[in-house]
Image 1: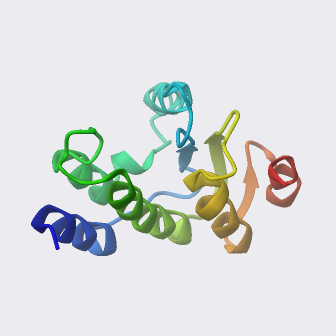
Image 2 (image 1 turned 180 degrees about the vertical axis):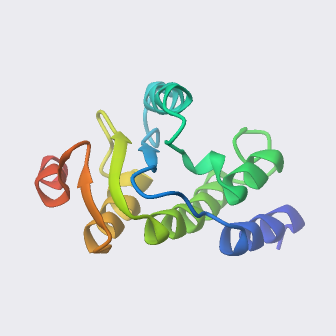
Image 3 (image 1 turned 90 degrees about the horizontal axis):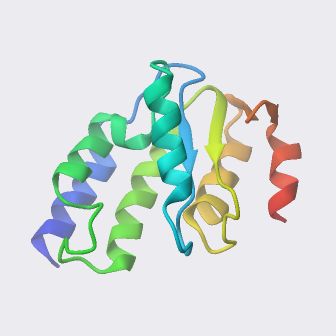
Length: 142
């Protein structure tokens, strides 16, 4: 197994993903032609000091430092997706309160639709997405 992949998996599994209540911001860019949702999420988080994207956690910051946002990391897209999925699942699992999501045109194959949204729906500590009941919000992706 690739050393970088092994190290990144360890980071995704162990580094802190903790956030204050009502602070998590998600975005979906998987299988999309642009990074518009990510840009909007980062812009929103930069204007609201109480909001955090995963890259603002210890775990996410370390993965970025390791080069896991660029296509030239030396890892396959599948490996990068696996690493971020592990971190994101933990991020959502530890979150409380309301979620802000930039998921316009989220693809059914995306990390958001396949992993994040189902985990939000089963986390009793998360109540709303973009101000809506989380189950009501999720109906648009069925």
